[in-house]
Length: 190
Ligand SMILES: CC(C)(COP(=O)(O)OP(=O)(O)OC[C@H]1O[C@@H](n2cnc3c(N)ncnc32)[C@H](O)[C@@H]1OP(=O)(O)O)[C@@H](O)C(=O)NCCC(=O)NCCS
Image 1 (cartoon, rainbow, N blue to C red):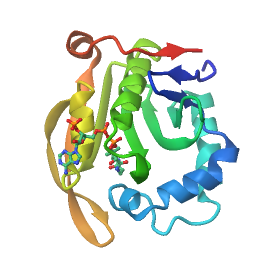
Image 2: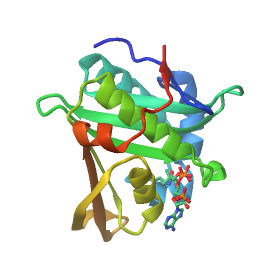
Image 3: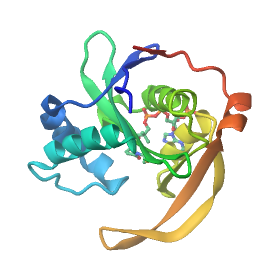
């Protein structure tokens, strides 16, 4: 697979994760608010960020993962992550994303996810992009909706998180309908 590019949006630079990001990943993903909305462990164990970042590199080389560190353009600080887990046989990518709670509500997740969806369809040639979120976490669904994804239903008791069976909402979008529904994202790749 080609080297993963850096995507530039209006306010963000989306670049591959680097091992040097591990302490920031541990701190941000170790936030209770992020952990409780995802399948991340809490507390976030030492060493996991390094293993995760290494696995992303391997996935990128195999062509079955594309993960972007979301950084603020200019100052460069890491504020989140967006990843596509790619099923090559079905030309399908599953999105996952998180943003540091101190940066919530400023449109950063929407800006980053929109760019990664554009990358998935226009550069990777995916046919479908989909995602799930805990039904109790509507902000995530709102991001997906703003990025042109369609609500596809609810899977009841789909995950067990901290001993509680959680419903998840399913969202997806096909390349052709995304082209019709979404303005061309303002991204530059280099
Ligand atoms: C979900 C998450 C990524 C959103 O990040 P963000 O940068 O705040 O997102 P944005 O600012 O781009 O958009 C958030 C939208 O959700 C809306 N929102 C926030 N709380 C909400 C709620 N309780 N109910 C409905 N909508 C809500 C916001 O108003 C905004 O929509 P708007 O622009 O129409 O006003 C962030 O909260 C997060 O990382 N959560 C923990 C991890 C997670 O949930 N990941 C997703 C699982 S795949």
